[in-house]
Structures are given as structure tokens and as C-alpha cells.
Image (cartoon, rainbow, N blue to C red):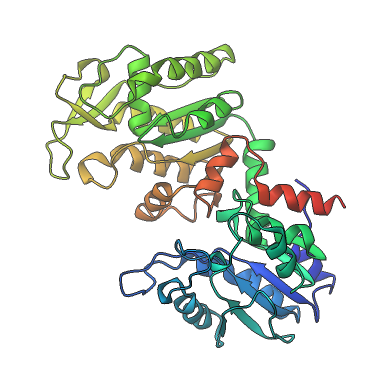
Length: 397
């Protein structure tokens, strides 16, 4: 994927004295009092900002936060808490500028945070008038927000069309490299773990991956639907019976290529969905009508772990059981440890996946952890993300 990289521009001295506009992803969770509860995205945005400051640029950064109404700024929409945390990480004061679309005063070596970009009228619909105004603010536009790369909005697409130079920041560039390594040029065997509550939300991903991967591991409610497709009783477990034919089609597509979708041979069940529910390990053929399948069984987990340790590339999206409940975490824990111990290049993404990685402390052993939820899923679907598309167009001239 050929895009211009901000790191190259800085290395060549082309950012010195220039007005640099960075679209970051600073959309962090906050409590009711507005305090930031988890700052991963802010910390991930710091290298790009430091790079611009070290290069001697005049730096403007913006992001969305929450779901504001365009044209109606409210105090809870403000990036002020983000500016405070960013200031702590950078060791400098970060002023927040409101009503910035018509002009921003910033000198080389200075940094300003431009207030919540989604408050601007026309941002979500990528208004040309807004995009041109924002592009006029800068000499170089840097997209470093992979989490919004699947949206064609004013600050993710429009500004990149009209800015004198448009490039990828280090975080976005790292995502591009990891995605290319995992999906465009994978070391074989290529194993993908796709788990979650519903097949319907990930059907296009499953279909897309079934044409490329050597092994497609399904988990959670998705696995239950595949068990139905294999003729197994799943009791009262979460599943989508109306999508059994689609699941069969994925199994057949894999089989035709000499690949497989491993169906669980044993499962962990309970009679009710509760953290303290009595867990029972059963063969997949022995599930009762009043059983809920809440995890894969130890035999299945071991088999999958052994296969993952032989993989060349692993793509992971979703835990394979209700790992939040101790009695039903073994499957996800075993898979996580297998990925950590594998010599494969691994890429993981999605909120629940990141929670599992944090819970089992394997972040250093995963090859690349993607910062985007929806964007990561769309890449797995085989889509070209709008932010990538416009940066490639600009790089091609």
C-alpha cells in the first residue's frame, strides 16, 4: 500500500517551519464527571505529535470525542480533559482552541489542540466547503487516526483531498504495515480467529477470510451457529439458526481449498448465564436442551492451541468464550497463551480482544495490536478504507 509517510517528510526536513494538521484518535472513555478512565489512545497519539514538534513544525491536533451534535457545542463535548492528559504526557501546556475552522494562530514549536471536530457543521457528511477551509489551515495534513479510517469524513478524507500534502502518521503507517504483513503477504499457514456473539455482524468477514486463510477458528455465539450447521445440539445457547446455511457455505468454501473450520469437540456449559453458575465440561455431542454453551472445552482449546503454535500468521478478533467469568475463561486464556508462545506474526484487534490481551498480560507477545475496532473489522472484510484510499491517491499524484 503506497502512501506518503510523515516520518519520511520529517527525516527529509520537509516539516520544518510548516503548519502541520494532525487528525488523531483521542476518543477516550470518560466517567460521569468527565474524567478519562482509559488513556491508551492518547498515549498512542503522542509519537506523531512529538515527531512534528521535534521537526520544528507549528502543530495543530484535532479529534472527535463522544457523539456531539454538529453546530451545538456543549461542555461535555470538550477535548479539555484530553488536553490536560496530553500535557502531562508531553510535559507542556496544551491550549484548546474553539471555533478554529476560519483560522488558527500557531507558531513553529507550538502545539494547539483544536476543539472536537465533530461539532463542526458538515464534518460527518464530508462537506467540501468545510474540507477546503480546514485544508487551508495547513501545509501538511497527517492522518494518524486508524480508529476512524473506515469513515469518509471532513477530517479523515476531505481535508486529505485538498491539503497541499497529505500523509500517514506513524500509528496509521504501522497499521498499514501490520495489515499488509498479515493479510496481503502472510507467512503460511494463516490462521484467523473470529469470535463474537453474532454471525450476522461478521458474516462478510468470515466469507472474505474463507477465501484466504488456512484455518478459520470460530468462537462465542458464532461457534454455536457453526455447531448447528454441523448437526450438533446447542441447547438454549446464543445462535442464529437462520444463518446455518451461510455457515455451511463457509465450511464448504474452506473444505474446497483443503482448509478447515474446526468445530468444537467439547464445550463448557451452564444452566444459566451467571458468573457463579455451575460449569460443566461436556462432549459437543452431549449438550442438553436446557444447556448454555459459554466456552470451548479443554480438549478443543488444546487442539486449537497446538494448531496456532504451528501457524505462520495469526489474525485474532474476539474471545472464544465468556472470559469475563472465571469458570468460562479457559478457552480464551489457552488461545491467548498459544498466540503468545507462537513464533507466528500475530495481529489482534477489537475491544473484547484487547481486554483479553490485557487480562492475560500478553501484549508484549502479540506482533501488532490494532487500535481500531470498526476499521479493523472492515479491513478483515477485504474493504479498502476511505482514509487509506485518499492517501494512496495523493501519493500517486
